[in-house]
Length: 317
Image 1: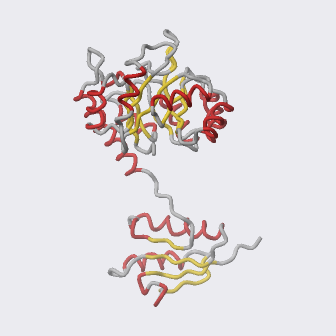
Image 2 (image 1 turned 135 degrees about the vertical axis):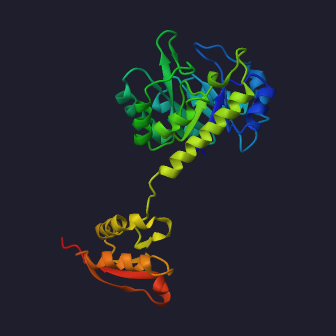
Image 3 (image 1 turned 60 degrees about the vertical axis):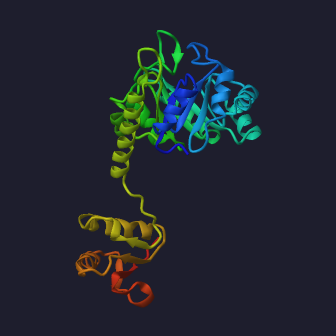
């Protein structure tokens, strides 16, 4: 749900909501009942707008409420199916929300303040079971605001959280059309969020800035997708069609090693028919590997000469 998510918070009115959705924004944030910052609109207006937001777009209640009952009641009053919690919410309260209102998706904030990564990693461990995603943001010591500060934090901390979290992490804090692409490439978050970073001098969302933010975010997500390592299932079938021939020399030995470690000793390597060049490369590699008991070009149900069947030596324990 949160993969490649683009969220813009601080919706002012219905016209702005329509503009954001038309520009490709998937998540519209409504900050309400805040301890520091002023709300962008009243709760009745927010509820009216939220009820017009339909899939594939989503409304997100952003609040500092800490008690499960208060959060559930507020979500129901507004018609919001996602809540972003920035308060000091206890694990028991998150558990109560998940148990009593499983239809409500929870995003829990991870507010970066100086070098507090150890505390944030601890938060990830204790909250992960009960949330659908996390969102990083920036603490402002001047105002005391935990999020919605418009300030950038140390992206290295957010990158660490992305790497350690079992749940998606959304990056917020000072995101603008000018830095969102670089932020995505550096941090590799599931999604990004901005508020003031796309506003004009009057505090309204600027359509030009919004469209550029969406475009730059999508480019960033594509760059990350194109450079992400491919996770290969270790199931005894290695299909080389999606790999460059230069990768084969390292890929084949590593894959066979992983198979043996999982107790898989019969492997099929699919290299295609073609000119037979890739088959020759694969079989040349196999002939030099001491862990290979035997191999032969597969026939019939084994895939014809488009595959090579390999028998590996058993690991002696």
